[in-house]
Structure formats: C-alpha cells, structure tokens
Length: 343
Image (cartoon, rainbow, N blue to C red; front, top):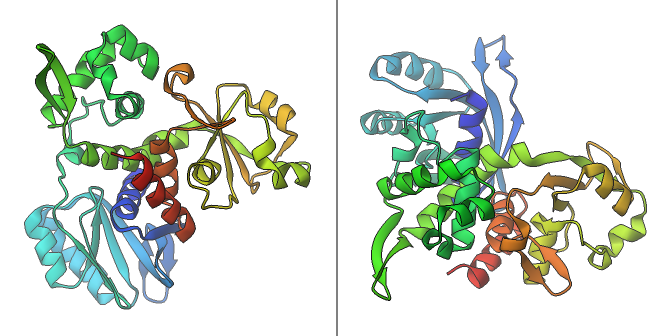
C-alpha cells in the first residue's frame, strides 16, 4: 500500500470515529537541516477550537527490529511526531504508548496526546486492513457493490443479474463479493416466509468501513474537476436550479436533507459529460472554484433519493462526504442526517 493511501485511509477513519478534523498540509518530504529531520508529511488536527500540528512518519507495517530506530528518531527530535501505519502489532502499540509516541492505524486505533488533546482507541478490528491482495471487496468495484446493498439491502435476495445492474458491477463479481461479506461477518443466512434469506449483520460497522474507504479509495477516482458559476445570481438561488441531469451531493445534499446548512462547496454527481453540465449551469473551470463535478457510480433509476423537486444523493453518501469535513457545521449536519435517515 502506498504511503499516501495509508495516510488518507488512516485520517478518514480517525475523523469518522472521533469527529475530529484532519488536514494534510504537505505531502512532500519535509527537511529540517538544523536538526537533521526528515518527514513524510505534515498534518493539522483540529478538535473543537483547538488546532495542533504533527510531522508524520508513514509506514506500511512495523516489526520488532524497527523499534530502536523509530524510538531514536521520534523521541530525540524536537518536533511533535505522529506515526501513521497500515498495521501495528499489539505489543508494539503498547511500547509506543509507554514511550509517549503518537500513532495512528488505518483501522482507526490510535494513541495521540498533545496540547491537552488525548485520543486512545484500541478496539477496532484490523482484519480487513491486512487482507490479501486477492480480496476485492474493499477496492473500487467492491465499494460500488457495497453502496448498493447498504442503500437497498433487499438486493441481496434478488438474482445476481439484478444486483449487477443496479450497482453497476460486473456479474462475475457478485458471488465473490457476497462470499467475502460472509467470511468477514457482515452477512448471515436466515429464513423469511419459509425461504432462505440473507441479512446484513453488523450494519453500523459495515457503514463505517464503507465511509472510510469511499473517501480514501473511490471518491478520488470520481472527480471530474473544479469549477465556478459565471453568474453569482445562480449561486445565490442554487435551490431553484433545475437538476434534471445531476444530483446534489455533499453540502447541498446536507442542506436539503436537514435544512441546517448553508452550502459553500457545491458537489454535483452526474453521468453526463462535464461539458454539458458546464454549459447547462454556466460554469467555467477554476481549480479553486466552489463547484465540483463527480461521476455517478450507481444506477440512478434504481437508487434515486428525491427531496421535493430536487434530486439528491442517498443520505449515506451525503453523510460520508460531510462527516470527514474540517468544518464543524458540516459534521453537525452529518450527525443530523445519521439521526434522521439511518436505522
């Protein structure tokens, strides 16, 4: 797993579990020539009104023989470090904690203590993070399949062709995905009306896992670019925009679902060519613009979620985008969505 992917998975899962905001300030290697320090990244952690920064050392997995070097590097240097890893064995976690070294796993387990902040999580399963390369459930195609069954669990008890059509996943993947879900404890077999029936087990844990990996693995692949409205009057009256060819996601979806939020970033999901959407909404490219266009990854007629005259993404997707935001109002909106729409 690449360093950037490890970082993104770890901070997204941490944000989902704790509600804290984490922003990567720099992914380039940082060098302090005076103290001979090198780091893989720098982040800012925000919780409430408090902000604190860490230099980051990113590792795939730590082994016993690596401990002396890590202790020497992270204890002796005069900056605050966070060790971010795909996986840390339990005895090594205990060693790091005893030495006061901050760490964070991709599963969300962590020990972070600085400037009055204290996070200690030690009960998150790491099995999925150590899966073999053959497992596809937690990759892009698997995440599309999972989105479909989380939104519409009854799909599990239809035929494979229907599941494939509605989740936009190749037919040959459906059986293996269902088997992986069973092996990981997320599906159980039962009976309904005297027929064999599949039920989602540990749904909240499965949702958390999907949210974490959607932001780290799938979402970056969906982005078509950033834009801005040519006419500010359109922006001021965004609810009146006919959205026949797109769905509101992110902040606009949160606003429409809860009535709580005033959007600043306007996320659009569409299956249309971005040039058509640009023409329809009078958008121009702008890398710092407040409109982002994303590719739809579900079969829209099957998974539509309607809110009055506006078409918006399903609440699970809106929640996933908002809960990892640095903005406290976005996270509050996400919690309102969860309370209103999640079982």
